[in-house]
Amino acid sequence: MAFYLGLDSSTQSLTGLVLEVSGNAKQVVFRRSIEFDAEFPQYGTRTGVLPHDDPLVAASSPILWAEALDRFMQILGSESDFALTGLRAVSGAAQQHGSVYLNAGAAARLRELDPGRPLSVQVGPMLSRPDAPIWMDASTTAECAAITEALGGAAAVRELTGSSACERFTGPQIRKMHDREPAAYRATDRIHLVSSFLASLLTGRHAALDHGDASGMNLMDLGSRRWSEKALRATAPGLARRLPELVAPWSIVGRLAPYWTERHGLPPAKVVAWTGDNPSTAIGVGLVDAATVAVSLGTSDTVFGLLSGARTDPSGAGHVFVAPTGEPMALVCFRNGSLARERVRDACGLDWEGFSRALAETPAGNGGRVMLPWFEPEITPPVLAPGARRYGLDERDGRANVRAVVEGQMLAAARHTAWMGPRAGTIHATGGAARNREILQVVADVFEAEVRPVAAADAAALGAALRAWHADLLDEGEGIGWEEVVAGIARPAPGDVVRPIAAHVEIYRTMARAYAACESHALGEGPDPTPLLEAIRSEIAS
Ligand code: ADP
Ligand code: XUL
Image (cartoon, rainbow, N blue to C red):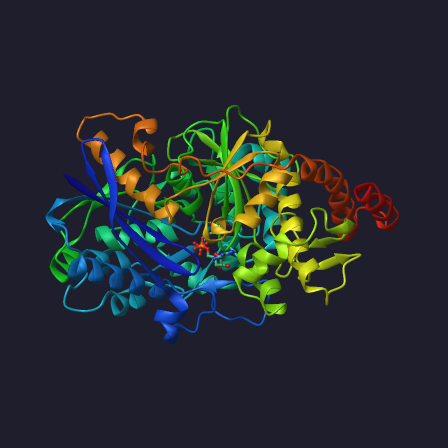
């Protein structure tokens, strides 16, 4: 019997779970989630983000993430009722793109982490910048333009790194820091992603970064999976020596440092490279072939799947990352996910049950009314000026707004993922909102696919535990296929399926044209869609 710990440091919380593996049987034997805002109010975060006057800026606190990790390990050490000595390996997933800036003293401080003092007080002195920009930041449009120009245009950046230069990606964030805070940049010895920062705390040394999370930086050559000298030059001087080593996702990057063994009674388990939450979720929902895609309805909504052939998104909104299997995966991210749904829910004074009822009792297509749900600056399509746009929709009509926010989100998701290739027949759904059947019905109807909610909650943490198991076996010289890794656990519950309703599918084919016209108009790229919407209204009414 062996145990594997998977962690997920997401925008709003840290979740960890322990997987017990005995022969072919796997089960989760321990699970705990720690909400940042509620458990650590002293940092002043709201939904995991430090308040800022500029709506385009989003940062969080690396000390908060460290304190949450320490708290989780303390709970694991004191409350778990299985033999901790059997813990063989640990891995993790983290919100992607966010960056942590460490000074030259950090390497020694990591080596000498003192088990007698809380981690949080030991992390502060390692930082060359107190906060960490995160994936919600949209303040680097100028930096993206400069990098794009230096690399020969958007298509060239995509070919090289798998994505166009994106505001939230780490390269543009580093360039901004270099240009606007030169002293802090000079004082920076190592730049980690959230994933490799937390792995460094676990191992007590600067941990390597996996190809999967490194794909979200606009700095790695996706073909060779090395840092691209060109991209580094286009970003900031002296960057190569500030970046972690790159490794394959299944690499062992160290062992739990004495801090963890002495302070919390954990064994010196192997630490497997951490990755981004989306790549890790791919394993946690059982995406091990290109026939299935996943929809993750969390703080952000993401749609992703393994790619069968090489392609990038010509529109520039989608990304190609390296999956934990080593294959390319496509991903499109929508910032206005759960928080936008919550915004509409709260404006109508509803709970989730009432939200679901409003969805169930309003007609598919919403009588031709459209919402572009850009309450916050949006990533896909890129929108910097926040504010929902409504077409034919009265803001005071609560139930129609409930349907409009979900339909707007799913019509956008279908439109902006068409580049990924032929539509999948099955969608695996995960994330907090995947427990909402009425939302999943809209996903099924718009994507014309069967939607299967993945039974296990916490897919990113589960994916991390499964990756830890896979890497441990590989390290012991026992190869194991990915099908076998996910078998029996990272799978939709048998028989639990939401099927598309034929009449709704027809309506959404029409509404896709309505959505596209509204989006083009709102982006200043198309005419007033009112005449089209009027025609569509009578089309779907008949
Ligand atoms: P994260 O991206 O932080 O990991 P989760 O995947 O845990 O987020 O999702 C959390 C979100 O799930 C909450 O912000 C909430 O809006 C949403 N949620 C929870 N329950 C429901 C429900 N019944 N219907 C719709 N959304 C829900
Ligand atoms: C993906 C992205 C988000 C974060 C959320 O590109 O920015 O999904 O990973 O944690």
